[in-house]
Amino acid sequence: MRDESDAFWCFVGLMDVMESNFHRDQNGMHSQLLSLSKLVHMLDPQLHNYLEKVECLNFFFCYRWILIIFKREFEYSKTMRLWDALWSRHLCAHFHLFVCVAVLQRHRNTIIHDQLELDALLRLVNDQSLKIDLDTALHDAEMLFRFAGEAGQQLLPGACLA
Image 1: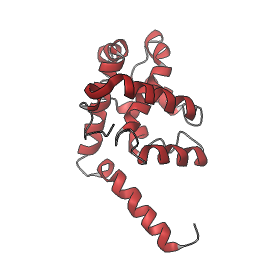
Image 2 (image 1 turned 45 degrees about the vertical axis):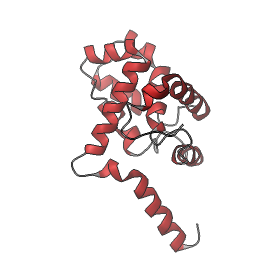
Image 3 (image 1 turned 90 degrees about the vertical axis):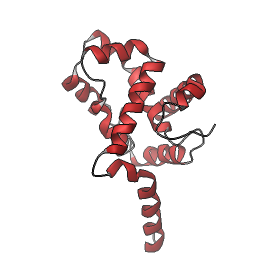
């Protein structure tokens, strides 16, 4: 981007979208993590039950994904494509939470079978950097969104537009 004013206004738009992630009281992040827990409970009860058993229902292992909206998980061009898809709000304002569920479901067998606890879950999530297939994640997230329907949308911090 060559025009400094365009860069500034793009940054302002970015901060408008991500503002709640950076509140001092962390309320925005906590509400998203709680919604993620509720979505996993609805969409994958077995995984949710396992995470409850190992006391990981706070979903802090997904904190980075949500805080910076998968910025470190993809190369630059794919990150821009993901953000474009998310911030178009085509399906809903919190579609990134369905992306989180989709990625977790891709690893659910490992999580449950290998009995991963918080440290190992953090390692697994961090190891996904540059390994997630964006097309698959978006496809799976859309299928989960459609499967969850209105009931799933009610679990999100804000109303989704269908």
